[in-house]
Image 1 (spheres, rainbow, N blue to C red):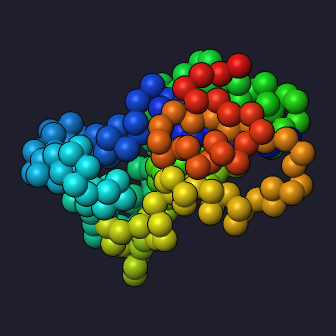
Image 2 (image 1 turned 120 degrees about the vertical axis):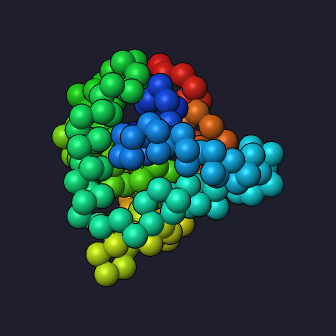
Length: 194
């Protein structure tokens, strides 16, 4: 059996993107950046620009031209040191239940692979997530491929997993970005756990 979990909001009490940015650059720089980006953030809230464009602009503002190794070091520190503080106990119990049943557990997230990877490895969970593009050892501020959101979640799942190998699929999500993934499942959990 296969269990697919969204990350932000489904497994966590808050969105890891702003949490990570604040961790990486510090609160003063984070809030100043939000002020500078306010026209983009308002346009996103008003649905004038899509999720992926707003998110890429946010990433570029804070991290474009950062050294890839330095960035990954900070991402690893966040992954191991901070993610446990924002996970929901009931969600982690559900993951643990699937693991004890011998199910394959996969997180499918629009968040960045770089700051989820170490935590997922420690928890023995597979990961499909948005990746950041690098060039000549620096972050470009763009995604490598598409944002893992909505229909892209399904495309990435199908690319990484042969669904025909599983006789039953569970899926857990909490937002419209998870709806397509939930449609893949035999048993869907939207904003709740069994």
